[in-house]
Length: 502
Picture (tube, rainbow, N blue to C red):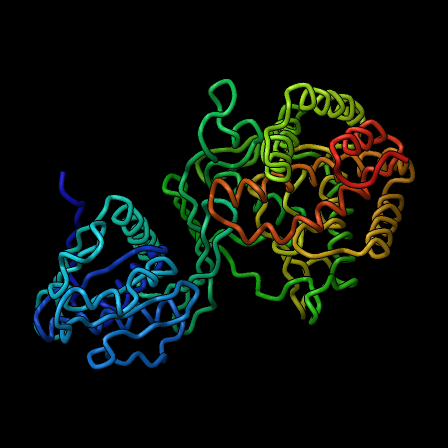
């Protein structure tokens, strides 16, 4: 079977620029794009548009590499732009650094015919035919690249159906999951956000034929996001408005809540903003639990944060974190003792207050909105994995922020603020029960995240999260000081993690 291929008709240079944006958002490290066609067919026009799209700079100077042979751009994805017209033989490719370029980013190669036998076998060939502004593009390449490009073109078709077809697309972020986000801009309109979340489980089956995502109740499509967003807005919180949706394909066009975070100018927690985030939780936790929530033509039943979900999360510590730290697999007996301790702790949570748990309530997902009033000053995103569980979980998520250090003094103030707000709304609020649940859920969350960050590095090749491990280790040591967690503290001491038993 030969390489997969697609054919695209482009009416003018604007269409070429939009297609280059679509290709740029499908590019990954190691992609080698070979641009073929006669003089004047549009190869250089396409290359410039693609590089400017990756740079997110429409005015970026992109000189022809005809005389330099190679131009390198250190962008979010490094790009090497090569012109092989003047090389004498394919041996010169090694001198141009193609292998290094593909190891770090992607490459665009004009006149690839000059070195066809020396180019990667998994190259993507883009053939340009036409004279003037209109052209026909025939693209062929590995199934993986063509699938990525088809997904990007499906996003463009979704935008077109939503009335944003000629808008420009700008990479915003990817995250630890398969979701990606783009900022969509069109003249005389406020920017909006495209969420690209193809339906799929998180990894292969791990137990009883189920993937981790189903056991831990992670969203596998965009339906929960739509349902939870609308419910949160109805409660008076600033979740994004859903502007357009394709639930089957996994595309959402949502309100852009802004770009200011809740950290200060030194990238440290801003006490005022974190305080407002606590106030939002206190208000939310006083609401009745949601039932079946509508999402377009279907409904979403918020799952329970049950002991099975909690357990498979804490297993990430013994499955990933400890083996990475020690260099050996955790013995079955040690692992069984660890899980026994957690089962007893989970049993203590059966009487804990329950609410909607947003699950990732921390600085990357909270937006400061100056000029707004009250709770509307805080935008909330990334809640598609919400469950019904202990109210303390999201409080721990904020007070032990995984991405930035919340000093103990600020964490204590935030906890006191939360307790005071809950008592104002409910004089019978059980502070002691809450603080015990808080310690258990903080330790549970830290154990999970320690494992997730190692898994992201070892399974998914995302090493950047490893820098957060020392912070999470400090957090879990602090949580273990609560008397209810003494058995877990003893296990950790025997495992050689954190402080010894005291």
